[in-house]
Image (cartoon, rainbow, N blue to C red; front, side, top):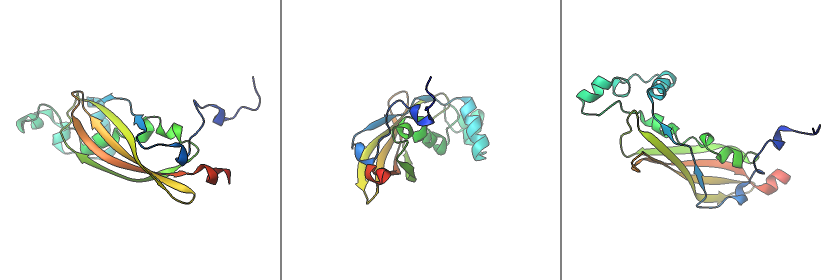
Length: 162
């Protein structure tokens, strides 16, 4: 057993910096079925008490097949930390700059969501760079239910060595 071990040794690969990334690079986020427990957890965390999200009979009276997921609950599925992006850029990630989302189709309790982040632009700056990623969420039928944009600020390799 080595006495010089540090937490940085507990990685699957060396951390990447801004200039190591490529447009078109994809970060798959694990799928997740939208269960009653997730609906209840989101209600607790958000304080949202609109019956469209938590009263199945109310939803059915409005013509929906089940409870409708809150848009932010769907958007939460694109959290980069749910995938491997933060691990890939562990030493260079400074923070999230901006997020946006557009909702295209309803998501109901029981739907399984498949989120994906894909780098669409790399904007270099002096010692940092902005990584722009498209966020796409599909349901179990392959239908795009949400699209959006994430922007992250990363260090350049030279700035880290500096």
